[in-house]
Image 1 (cartoon, one colour):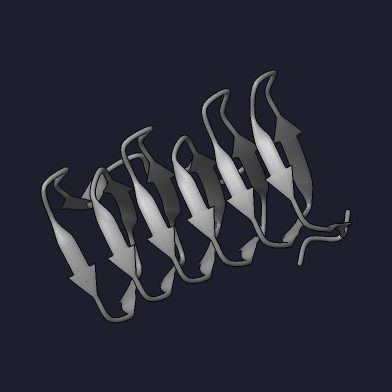
Image 2 (cartoon, one colour):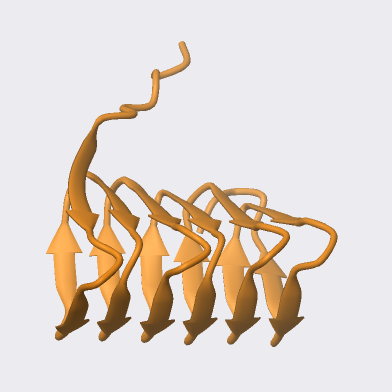
Length: 114
């Protein structure tokens, strides 16, 4: 039996926001602004093309459209969009790197989920 993913957005960080510190939540988050710190959730992390993260990301799925300077880890899928810049390692069950994405680091794929 497949469990349907919750697509409800629980938290939004605005484009003009600069947040310093770690963020922990259970739901989904969309980030348009800048975060200096780690983001950890049991849900999905989505970064717009304007997002800038200096820290680690950990979630169920990660959709990266902006810049990340840190390691990323997902139980499911990590997607690097065409404008993404990732300087760090990826650990995920599935990794998608779109044309135009820039990635400097190592990949570790665990098909049994991480």
